Length: 213
Image (cartoon, rainbow, N blue to C red; front, side):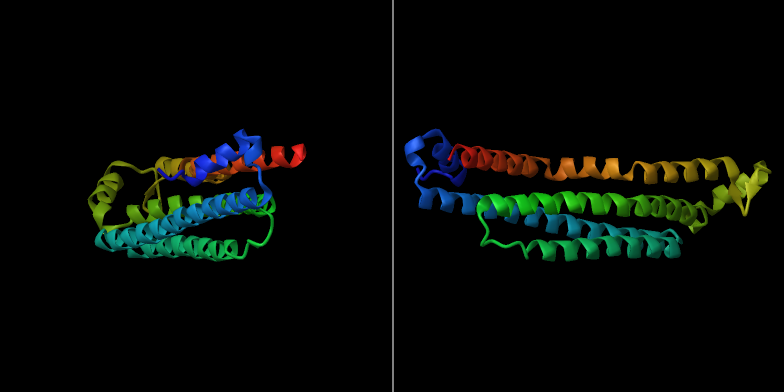
């Protein structure tokens, strides 16, 4: 049975006689391109997931009588998806003519920059999402009976909203903004952790080989 690229890759490190420069360099190139292309496919799926999710929210919001809130969330998520699309296009610009080590190092740096960028972006997106969802849902046709009941049984209102509940939601939105970077890193680890582990492993193997030459 023909060996997989991964198996040949491992064998190349286990057997000193297999380290023939042209063959090993070709394996490096194939391994590097395979990792990046796999990440790109997953990244593209994630972008489409955001777009589909945003569309479903928009449709549901109009059904609940909270069209404006749904439209704000829809536009916000589309902006995130568009930014991700531009970043994905930028990833294609990585120079495949570099050595495999430099190519994967550039890719790893791109990932770190992306994590930092979106962690900062979500400090705004998360609170906007939460507050828009809360205010939109509260004033929606769906919750009109609840609003009327709250108005009848509570004097602790401002602009028709229950003050303790509103303050709790605002506090939660602020907390989400504060922890946005950490939450985003956990999300990235959950979605891309396996491929990032392979990337780090490949870079370590290459570095060890470079230092033993």
